[in-house]
Length: 290
Image (cartoon, helix red, strand yellow):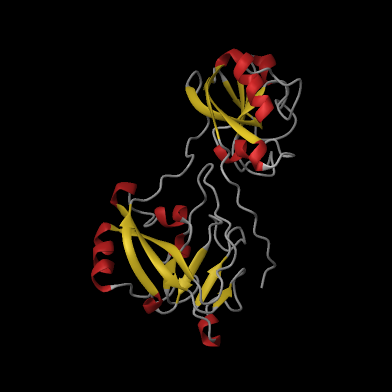
């Protein structure tokens, strides 16, 4: 599959894997999404390189299961299969922009081309690898595609949702004992700040190391929901107009992380379920173009 020829826009809340560049001559677990019929052919006779693609000829793989799980794009999920492989990447060339080395890397002795996450090469922002020689790839097995972590659109009025709140261990103890208390202010005004995205909650409090954080899982009846996509206007006045929750969609520009956020006006709408450990947070890749 020539993945990057028809790459997708990242769905709501799906995390981007931000592993560093593959190290020369090391082995990595990677994934390839395909149809069930094609998977049988690959298991029988191995991979055949594409004749072209975003990075030229080769076998397109990713270390990001989310990336592989969405291919082939035109097939429904129940018809897809993900092939897990082990790859000796050989000599690796990083490709961060179009042109230049984009399709000529193998001419200069490289065995693998790697597109980092979030570099602007593809709409999804997910990492990609092109392996020139299929002999570098050892098939391990097949697995089911991974569902996106969060694919829900705007919370539906008067529905209940599982949400998360990141806090300190001391703060969690107080909340478990006496419930949530709304903040006096915030980006969306007073209220209790939650998210359906565990990644979002796992980062808080920002000033505490991960081992001192706790995530509280809650069930929320959102009541009447107002979507907030820009600063000003309804940003802090939504409750004055009869709304019970304010929702900031992912990737709307309101917050740097691009992760969704909910503000619940009345804590009585929140039922605490339990506490869990924060989800480990990967570091962010930063790299210059070419």
